[in-house]
Length: 278
Image 1 (tube, rainbow, N blue to C red):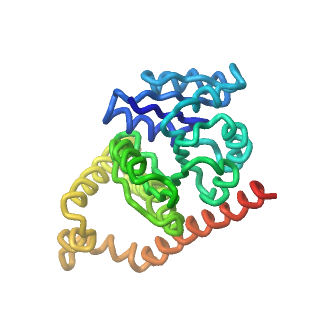
Image 2 (cartoon, helix red, strand yellow):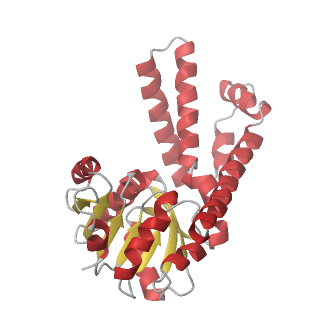
């Protein structure tokens, strides 16, 4: 039986573990949080996991990680150094560390836990319902069979994409942060519907259903330009609306947003590297 320890399990860590467990209920999961209150909430979200908190037991992280096949590091980036320094002495040499912290490079993780193989991943929140995107960038020292096992585990949470670590910032801008871009567009469309005289509730229902339908169509035919053109009759309502987006520079806006998120990811790597090595 595969054992996963999830250390410092927040929203993203919870989403990922939920996706993994939805595909394979036999996996043994030990999860930790910082506070007793968050541990209580997590037990509700992960009823099949063993959940403990550092507030209740200052050895909770070490105990959870002991003998685990994979240790998922779900703590905030600025907490990584202290957390991993505390864990490293008690880790078995073949335990694979799986970091989902944005802006923490594998090389810096290796200085904190030099004896363990390291895989860097970047999931997004739809992983909780099995429709996430999870970038996977293993260190060259990770055995191929362990990488394959990890891929199989993560596939329960969504699409697993192999990337070089240098490409993780780009993934962060597209999928890691990209979910929120779609939410923002939905928020703006609901507000526009209200201004057109719809109730907020009706506008929300319509926008949510439209987003769901569009996503399903796109998954069947993953060519957004062709899908857009298919519903854009000359002189029609859709083309009139699309023209506003295009004239306002939506492609430039999207490029700038992705670049900003990617740049911030790189900046965070430098900042966290200074903390870890400082």
